[in-house]
Image (cartoon, rainbow, N blue to C red):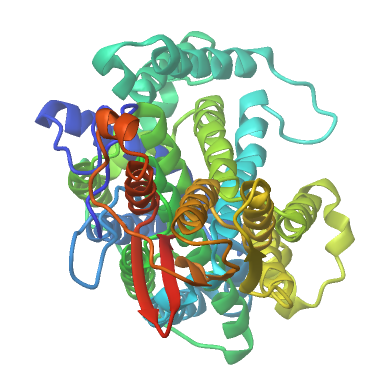
Length: 570
């Protein structure tokens, strides 16, 4: 993994180490956001007829797995870890499959299939580096944006106190949520210095205080929590593990959705941490997926649920300007410690719903806009517009018209349980489909003249749109090729020039051939004085600009024919 260029918007970049006090507060914020994932455990256990005690045990075992995976995620070098602050928690990816398994075979079947899906993630992490052409920015960016959109249903219902259709809204709930959101937005937008780092801590203090003041959080609620033991060992729900091949498909589908979400989250982490970001670094992503594999496998063995990168934490890092990987260690250790401190864990579990809603709305803003920034980092032609647009529209349809998918076969139902799942599957499949028939090679014939620059620009703009090149590469290729054609025209008498453009997801090569003399390339620019006195200095200037615009250029001359290959990294 190359050394990223720290953006000016970050207070603590990925390689920075904050002071201990700041690091602990940042870790506490991340754990607060990760605690939202425990909602999915409660939903799961309730759906299969489990008890509150069983929910607590599954949550605590999952916390241990989340903490270990979060620490591993931040590792640099080796097979495991992406090197980024991208925590894990109990995400929604596994929810539908886990409910199916729980109803069919109880907790043993959930734990067994979770373990198998974790192993599947580990195997997938070994081949994901070869799949980068299938996961361009428009695919990973849409996945990130859909994660943020998924948070709307969770966040807004709690923000507004919306429980059942037609029920009156409680103004106290909206007031607490609004006050909490303002308390987080104000330091982020108007705060200066270190106060920008702690919007969630500020929001939690204000939110809990407002909930007490308006009677949404009664003292008796916390008394019941605080009366429990301070320290206690988490217990695995008895019954061992079981497997059912008929339900393996839904779990592997859920695992694949989780993996693709990880690719999107880590792509956003890379972009946020590098002002010169160009493309997804797949070695880092592979290590991040393997860290998630360890988390899910460990969760299944311990008696927890499947683990996913928690996109809300990525949004929090963007909002606070603190993306330091050093925060992962105290956050992971705090999460593990909470599993053995049931009283403190229960305080997080008793977080008022409007406070949770405000927190989700806050981080969703950064996830949605960050995702679409990744999507638009490349030129979007008609093909890519339909890839993103169709997947986006039908992904949203799951929430807008959920009954439309009521008759979907059971084995395919995990794809249709959320906007994220359906949009993820569609954007990957459509990207594969629309790649058919797109040639990655094109030719252009030129003769130096007044129209050469216009023809070069039109050619590269057209091919750049078809191939999804980054605009910055198109601009550099345009200028580099133009300078080469100008140089050829000055060194030769009306030669015909043949250009062959070749492109893949990693490289653009412009292979230029002509008959005549070779152009001279220069590592230094001519002085202004030489340009004024020596007309031939303009050839040196063109040769210097060719090297300036390209990442690499090679030349050769054989039998009176010359060849130059302009290479651009992509």
